Length: 461
Image 1: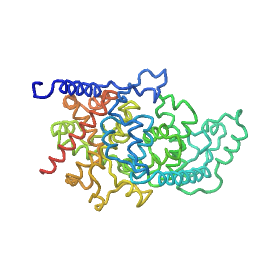
Image 2 (image 1 turned 135 degrees about the horizontal axis):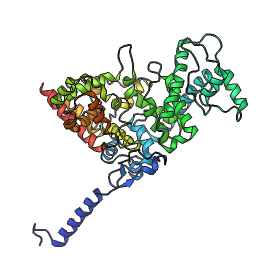
Image 3 (image 1 turned 90 degrees about the vertical axis):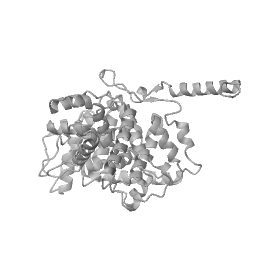
Image 4 (image 1 turned 180 degrees about the horizontal axis):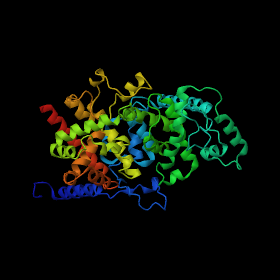
């Protein structure tokens, strides 16, 4: 008999079975660098830490097996798998459509296909509407300099226009002349159209700067696709329009989703979560609300650090502006930022998301009190959202987004260095030094711990 009374053969089988499982968990994983290739001349780009790990990463097989024959998705198991190991790059786009609420997990394959087709038609209509106002949309090219003045008068210098349109007249003379004639407006223009046209060159400038280390954006057609989507979105969202930073949020969508319309709607659903960050008034930018939440969270979980930052004149936490505005796109490699995003969305997933969207397909997220009375299984909610439900959202009118706690986790991790900072320049430098050196999963785990700690402390107050 074995020492614990078990049969020795059975005991040895159990031992080696456990050892095999431990070895599987220590699987070094498969690199994902090949999915998002970096240009050979870009040698200072941080390496992607995310790896495909057997038994952890949501694989194609596990994803397909999560659907019933009719097409209903078992979201509970899917969320757990994403939280522990991310999503395989080959299915990332379709998984994101569910995480962002593009499709309801209780819909069938046929229902989703019908909705997809309706959305593609709607996008084609929006794009055609934009093309009627400015024929560069959908032409395969884009602009990087203004084509209209603030009072609606066209900038008509043909040499300047040629540079701005980045067209080669010799290769496409007929099309060039046609575009040039149609692009010059005649007569008075609506104020909304003027404002939209004033943003088009800024979109072009940002497109040229976005993810330029990736091989994918060496192709003009991909740059143009990104410009088209952002130009259409700027017209579609009449209250927000376009703001710098949106190109960083949209770029992954066109890489992961081949169809331009599908990429647009995935981006549009992401913007429903984030558009508040881009809402500007004469005196403030929307993201300042999240910065004030970050300050409040830090004051609760690390009062010493918060006081030190205030003493340095950083109590507004503007040094964290970029992290919140574009969801850590600059702090991580391209692949790791995608890994972070899907973990975030899995952790704060709410199965009522689609029903909230369905009530008003073009409205931003704003959870009603009725939606907080959840009747669905807790397994259908992300781990972060379950903690919010458990606490009842006490201490805040609406639950804080996990992104606030992600930034708080980074600050907590660097608190020993930040506490020695002698000025805001030191703070910025310390945080800039984290670029490419942050572990996405550890940051998420840290955010969950801080969130739980924050809720407990707030509850006692």
